[in-house]
Image (cartoon, rainbow over all chains, first blue to last red; front, side, top):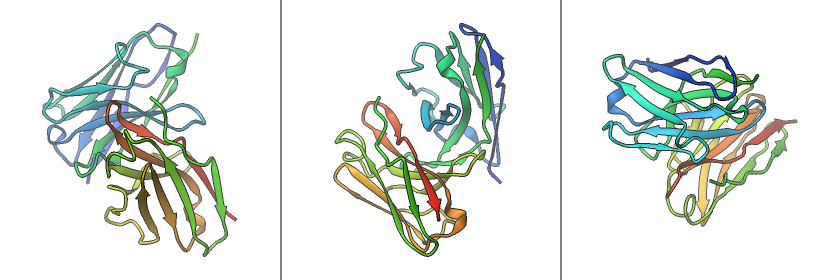
Length: 119
Length: 110
């Protein structure tokens, strides 16, 4: 069974940092492209970052480029999102999602982890 | 990065059909057949219901169908059921932005 479990969300002050983790099971992470997608309270979905399965291609939304870094640990079958210089507008539930490999669809999602940026 | 445009809300009675539109540009929806749709119930993670414009993943009801014309993709749900009441999001691969989502549509089953 494919499963994604995020963790690391917390209350953090503006300007602070946080590292989110996503542990995958039921499949080998390094064989798939992966995404982070976030959802601010009461708002819609927003794509945040993409990690290509080769490990050499990463993309970011304009809103987070230069502040967030996506990475992977194949040995731990885990995906990470390092978030620096956090702003109030980064407050959201962060989901990791697997790219199914057919047409950039996200076929499996985790349950999400809440990041709150507030003083 | 502009979001794809969806109606904020749609409604229909049980048994009826509804269609949700998703309008993008020639750089995303119009450029690729890489449109997917997600269903999200309150407090839950999104669930993939269509990919590649009109393909249904295993386990998704035939009542969900998709199409695309120009820069606009559409999701049609036929034979509405109460459990279809949820938020629906379209998503497209975009030339420079990788992925872009629609703003979401709240479906109410009357």
